[in-house]
Length: 173
Image (cartoon, rainbow, N blue to C red; front, side):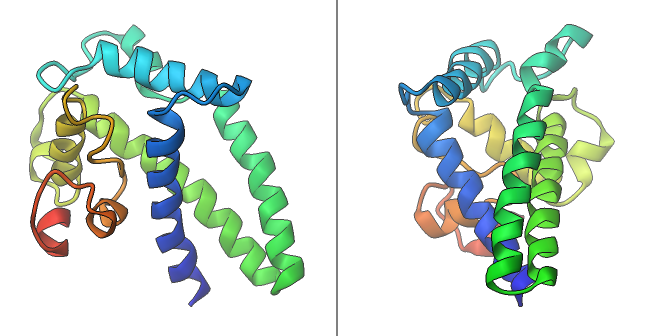
């Protein structure tokens, strides 16, 4: 139960961070840096018609800096510790593993969205969906309010921010 709950919540946290921090300028040092890195650099460099990595140097525009993983690890430990004290130790472990695994899935899917077209990204379910979903998100006309999930567009579907008007299975596949 807690695993499913944590995983579902993680999609909404990702959605909220993307919509409220990565695409909205919040004048607080760390949050401003996230906005600048994402909206002003990533979205200006990659567009909906040209979103693939062509050189090794472009990887820095796709992946979060290492300090993001470190901050996630520290805050994850704090949140997990609170969950362990409030509920039990296993829930603390589940929260931490969910946070780290969601980050790794996010980075893997984001990389798949920006690599050159190949058999894997074209034919693997969910990967090809997220690739199309993310390419549409890079359209300057909709990037501020559509397709905020990068892992699985569950929160986009529930919150009505998917660019597709389909049911859940249509949004995922």
